[in-house]
Image (cartoon, rainbow, N blue to C red):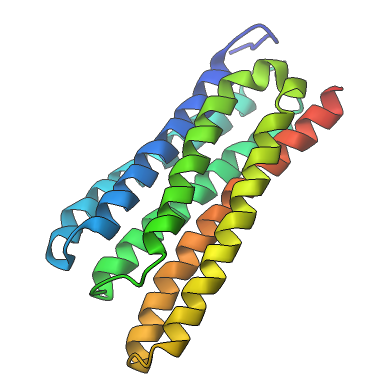
Length: 204
């Protein structure tokens, strides 16, 4: 397969990968709002989305290996695909651990952290088609960095609540591991934005 700069294949695949993040973030929102006994099916749906994300990533890599010309640096395309996949992996792990660890009520603030992930997912999905004019995406990476900064603040307050409310240490440990994965997802969204910014710098 020969790809010219006018071919939309990479843009379409990267947009598809980001759209999976929107679905994953919505599932996380459902999961944290659901009673513990109803979270299993939601986590299972999340894992299906994660598998679909892996399929898209593999298709991007295959297309890279069979394309003579790419819209921009082929290594950057591969890194961007991997960073998008990282986000979904973190979301999937958070959902899975919430079920496996039989987490009860989430501490106040988890809903806010997931809300920020939903915002970041919508922002990222909206930005991927704009890779055709990547130098115009500065508002995207600035907003992504702002969301990640806000997520860091929510994460710190969540840790303070966990460590200060007198909960059972094992419960604290299990809950913290889930929250850590959510925070890592927020970090991974910022990493996606950083790659886009790097591409823009090279293209300018």
